Image (tube, rainbow, N blue to C red; front, side, top):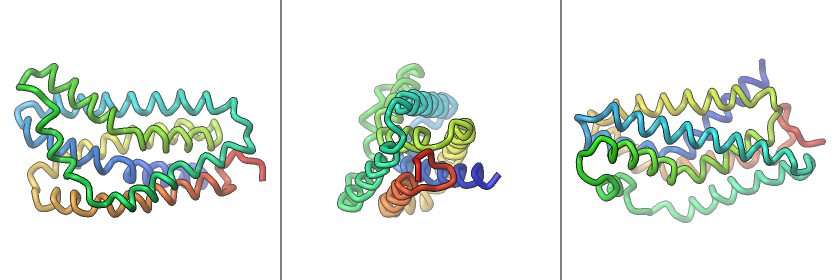
Length: 201
């Protein structure tokens, strides 16, 4: 039970750390397409499902990597986190949404939201692929369920934030500061030899 609670907490933290920018984009899409919120949410969830599936496939390929070297891949999210610390002053993610979706066509809205979330999910793909590859096979389902549950939570949160501009603006200001530290923590977890780790101590 402790293993499951640990991995669920880690996966939830990793999701928050790698998806705050996606949350901001989702808020922007929902704000612009208020009449098509269901389509926007459907596009977002579809994009996250694709990311989750890709993470799982990459992790399974990772099974061919010698176990004693697998944990060393934890350096990747650490480097991403360190890089993010030097890139705190980026253009507002929310402004990108206005340039990404043409017109009011529902199919275009759905496709653009899906592709935007997927394209912006590189850090999630790397991080969750490593977590899945570095953990016991019996923990794959809790990790993936946490990923999907957090996607649903973020969809609901984005919907809530659309009507609370001050909270949305606060998230936009602070998100870049929180993300790097969560990524660094995830990398340290992967490098360490924990109860959920496959590495030979």
